[in-house]
Length: 217
View: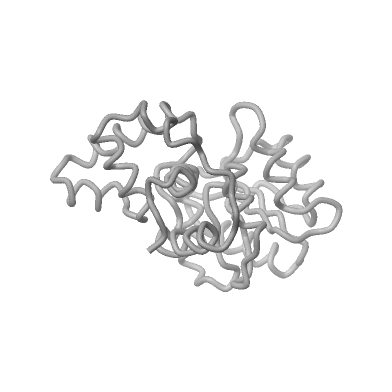
C-alpha cells in the first residue's frame, strides 16, 4: 500500500483528494493537514511514502515544508500541488528535492497516477510540462550553474541517458530510442543518480539544464 499525507489549506481540496485517493485499492491516506507546519509534524509522525504538498499556506509555506521533510534519510516523496499560474516556488521546490508537481485542476486519473509514479521514484510526473517550465526558468532567470566538471564522472552512455531524461523521456521511451532493455536503462539512471548524488529524476532534469548539458529549445 502507498501511504499518503495530504497537505493543503483548502478543506475542500484536502477532503476531495483524500476521498479520491482513499478509494484506490493500493493507496491509503493516513493523514491530512491544513498548513505546512502541521504537515511536516504529521508526516514525520506517520512516515508516509508520498506527501501531496500545497505551495501557499499559512504558518509555513510548502517550499519550506518540503525542504524540512527532505532533510535526513528515509524521507517521503513530495508531490507539489499548484495552480496553473506557477511561480518561482515550484522551481525552488524541485531544487529542494520534490519529485514533481501536479496542477490542482488536473483530472482525477492524473492525481492517482501521479501518486503511484512518485511513490515508485523512477519517473518524473508530467515530463513534458515539467520540461517546459524548467526551460522557461533557465531562459528567463539568472541561476547559479552547476559546474560542467561535475558531469565528468559520467560515461558517454550515462551522459546520453541523462540528456534523454532531461528531455522528458521515460525509461521505456529511452530504451526504445537507444535499442536497449528497459532494465538496462533503469540501471544506468540509478548509476547517474548515485554518481551525481541526486535524489530522483526531477533533480536530474534540473542538473542537466543548470550545467548547460541541455539548453532551452
